[in-house]
Length: 514
Image 1 (cartoon, helix red, strand yellow):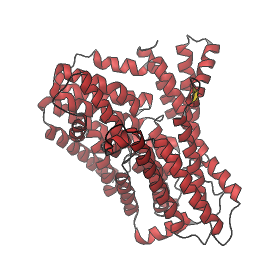
Image 2 (image 1 turned 90 degrees about the vertical axis):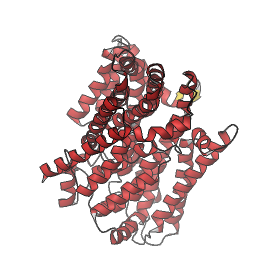
Image 3 (image 1 turned 60 degrees about the vertical axis):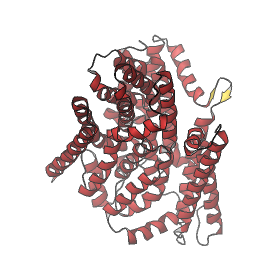
C-alpha cells in the first residue's frame, strides 16, 4: 500500500471526518489509526507500537531529545501564560479601550491586522502568534469574529513569509534552490537571484495577500464566515457558543482583569517579545553561519524555536513584574499561570496529533505517490508550472506541511525544468511554493493553520472551514493564471489573469450576497 493510490486513504479519512463531525482530535486520531493499520497489514499490536513511536519520536528519537518540537510546545505554554498575565494586568482591556478611540470602524481594525501581518515577515509561527496578541483586543472591540481574525492572520503569515528572502522560509528555500542548481549543473543563475525572480511567479501568495484587503474593502463574507460575522455583529458573540469550550488561547473568563491596567502593560511585553525573539534569531544565526555573515546566512542558520522560547520567557517575565507592582484587586498568581497553560492545551493537542499523522502519512508514502504523478506525467512542458502547482497543493493539503512539500517537490520540479526547458526553472519552482501554501491554507493538519487559530483565539475547525472558500478563490484564480502562462509564456498575462479573475469572482460574490 505504501506509495500507491491507497496511501491517500488516511488523509482522506481524517479530512472527511473533520468535515462531517467538526471534531478535530477524533478525526486526527482516526486518520492515525487507519494509517498505522494499513502500514502494518492490520496487525493490531504492530500498529499500536507504530502509533506510540510516532508520538515518542516527536520528543525523543535515536537516543536524543528532539529539541525543536519541545521548544515549540514550550513556547505555546509561555504564550498562554503571557496572554493570561496581559489579561490579569488589565493591559489587554486598556489597549482595547485605547484602540477603539483611534480605530473607530470594523474595517479599520481589520486593515490594521492585515498590515501588521505584512510587516512581520520573518517567520510564519512568529507572525501568527504575535499578530493575534496585538490585533485581538482591537478586533474584539469592533465585534470582528475570531474566525475572521484567524483568516486575516493566516493569509498574511505564510504568504508574506514565502515571498521574503529575509525570513526563515526564504533562507530555507534559497538553500534548497542552491542544491538544485548544483545538482542540475545550471550555471547562468544563482540561488538568491532565482528566489527574487520567483516572487512575481508566486501567483497564489500574491493573490492571497491581495484578497485579504479586497475582502475587507467589500466586507465579503462567504460560506460559513457569514454566520460567524453576523453573530458577532448582532450579538457580540465572537465565538460559536457550541464550540466555546475548545478555543486555544481563550481564558474562559477565569482570569479577572485589573481595572488599573495601562496600555503599556500590553505593549511593552509584546515589544520585548518582538525584540528578544528577533535579537535571538540574529545572534543564533550569526553564530551558526560559516564564512561571511550576511542577512541570508543569518536566517538560513537561525534557531527559530529557541528564539521564540527566549522571547516568550522575556515577555512573560516583564508581564509578571507588571502584575506584582500593580495596585488594585488581582487574580491569584498561580491561578493565572494555570489558566494560561490550560488555554494552550487545545492547540498543543491538535499540533501533536497533526505531527503524528504527518509521520504516519510519510511512512505510508502519500507524498511519494503524489510526487510520482508529476514525474510520470506526459503533460506539455509549457504547463509544468500548472502541474506542479496542483500536485504541490494536493500534497500540502494531504500532508499538512508546506516545508515537507518544498523539500520533495522543489528538486523534482527543478530537475524536470532543467531537463525539459531550463527557461521554466524559475516559474516551476515558484509554482511549487504557491501550491504548497495553497494546500497548507486548506489543510486542517497544517501547523501554521493550527497556530493561526491559536493566535486568533478561534476554534480550529471554524477557522479551517471559513478560510477554505477564500483560499479556493485565490487558488482557482492562480490555476487560471498558470493556464494562461502555459499557453502564452507571458508572466504579465498570467499575473494579470490571476488578479482579474480574482477581482471578478469577488465582485460577483458581492453582488450575489447583496
